Image (cartoon, rainbow, N blue to C red; front, side, top):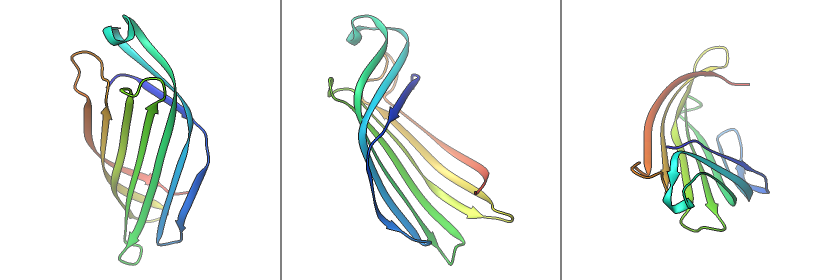
Length: 136
C-alpha cells in the first residue's frame, strides 16, 4: 500500500455499551491524503493527492467465557466525494486474552483494500499480528 492518511471528525452513535459487549458507529467528513512513489496517470502525472472525503467507522467488541476472551472488529471506510473510484477500506478483526496486572495478549487479522492503487500495485494487503498490550 502507498502512504496515506486521514483526519476525520463527526458524530457517532453507541448502540450497546456494557461490560460484555459494545457496538458504536462514527460517520463524518474527513480529509484524505495519498502519496505515490511515481507520478500516476489517473492524477495527471502528479505524485500526491489531497481530497475531501467521508469516513464510516463501526467498532464492535464482545466478551466470552466470563471475561476469558474478547472478540473485536473495527472498520474504517474512507470515500472520496469528488472521485467515486477513490475509496479505501481498512479492517481489524481479532481476539484479546487478559493476562495479569492489566496486560493482555492479542491476535488479529488486518486487511486493507484500496480501490485505486498505484500503478502496478495490488489493491489489497493483508497480515496477521500477535501482540502484548496493557489496558488503561
